[in-house]
Length: 482
Image 1 (tube, one colour):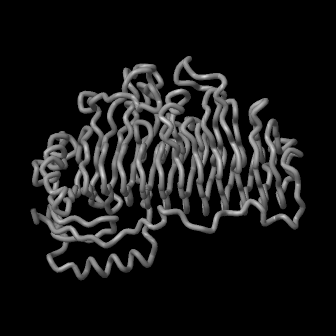
Image 2: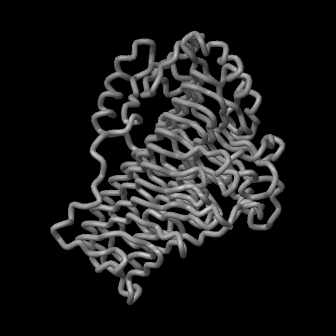
Image 3: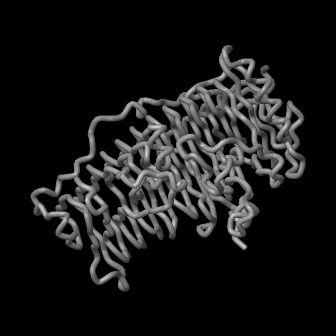
């Protein structure tokens, strides 16, 4: 049996932000949380938008005993609060307690806030999970050929949505789903914990997500997405429990997250084979910074394998990885089409890795047999700079496609210390082209050594992306001010 995470670590706010927040909470004039009270009179938090109205889940009949279903309470609360969309928006507070619930849909100009001792428990009854159509850029579910169970927290065609808290917990209770997956008993694709699609101006922050049935956070077909301060935990042998998967999104910022996963900590996607090509929506302008990842069987950051709509301008920096299969892995195949280009990685520190650099052009799973064998992916301008790795089995395994080489690979100022039982030949390169400088151990000949004077190659762009302009402000919740 796979273990569950029972005592998750909490992601921490920066020290200065914490001090400011403590001072402002002290100044909150409408009361504070009583040790015996069941609700909070006043608190403050950071969000991209503040709200004019607010209510507690308890106001709508919610019962936080861990056994009573709160699906209808969540649905009723959000339906009621949706009337304030054009009047300054509304926020729903989830108090301390264990709140069993099935799926519920969010609304625009809305904030969902979890108390630090609030736990959302995902229902085990499949009747609490409606089935929806496959994503149009995938053509089918990931687990099965049909539809998919809707995510626990779901939203579509929304604007200005915040899902946040004081590191409250969302527990997907995923082992039931993992066992069904392994036994081949799934009728539809497993649900995710949070999925927001066809939306803009989204914040997901300061939460602990554990034991997801499958992917944890999935923004898809969306823009201006801020993901901050998440702690994501799943057993490292749990199937497909990716941490954060930006998918056909523009302007996304992921920062200050701690992820332990049974799959990729972050997987960047944009559709699958002929469906992704036809849909044609790339992921672009993505920032990833200050990430810590543990994933013994997968990547810190994966680009693909579903990348048929294209992936462009990804900037990852200040990354720490421990006991993880690979650093930044590009996964693609014949039939994918699309592109992965303008990728920039710097200041990455790794310990106990199977691979540091891994590019695979033979990642061959397909949506169906309708893919175009002439649809070849374009992989170019891939840059790695200022990286250190210890206890590594193989420095690099870079494989392009015959007749479709992956080009413009640049690796500079990288020091890799091989494990005692590491590969005798640390690099394996086929059908790739690029340059290197200041790399230890010496890379393969296809990455031509430019000498130490070129150690500054593989430059990281200095100009910021528009998503860096997304700012948070201090907002206030006061109980029962509808």
